[in-house]
Image (cartoon, rainbow, N blue to C red):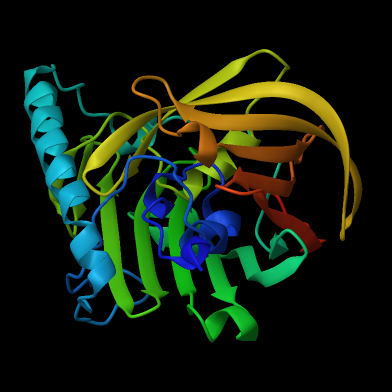
Length: 323
């Protein structure tokens, strides 16, 4: 049952975000650099919902993670030192923030995925552009992603996770991020409030400097869907998770027609990876199939594990109203 051990790969999976939550939490994939679990009380300042205080449940798996935590702390210190040497970009007036054309998604969009390991169904995930709310006097999409293990997997290792991102409608960058995890005995709350004017973020891990228009692990998928893509090209985006900012490169590999429960689609196959250092080891590579049209609907995602692959297949979908 080693494949069902808790994986720390979740936080680094940026482009695939919501629909791969369950895959990477119930399957032990030798993937990206791990991040320590957070167990801090989290209440997003000015947020639309409050994350309750929880206590981290210590387990044997947590003890095994201690070395990874030490390594990350060391790496974070080096990153902070390097960041302090950089010249911080000037502030951007609120009314001069970027505008991004979006013909890909809108309010009301709802995507439901089924998660499977080979022939075994493991659970489901839903990504939804729930509503429009105001943050910092800007209209934002409130995007919610949930992942749940099914009854069979829950008897072994229960997963019930929820992620929210408040994405600026005009600029397609996040103002707030919230994450509540329930994975086996582990509980964690994480949050970030982004100051996209002054390039900083207040998070449950402390205050951090950010590059302009940084993306969180959920908003990046929606931003990427609005970008022009051609086989052989690479999309580069700065993304934030935990205490790190990742320079993420998304490679557009090839065209391919795929059949999933929601239908048959002509797609572009893309692969996310870090530009430096290698985010994914060979066993943990991830591929995403986006429809080859203006919508760029994610219809299939695969992650390679020790034996075989785990799939997230689009089961049903409803398109939204583009504003």
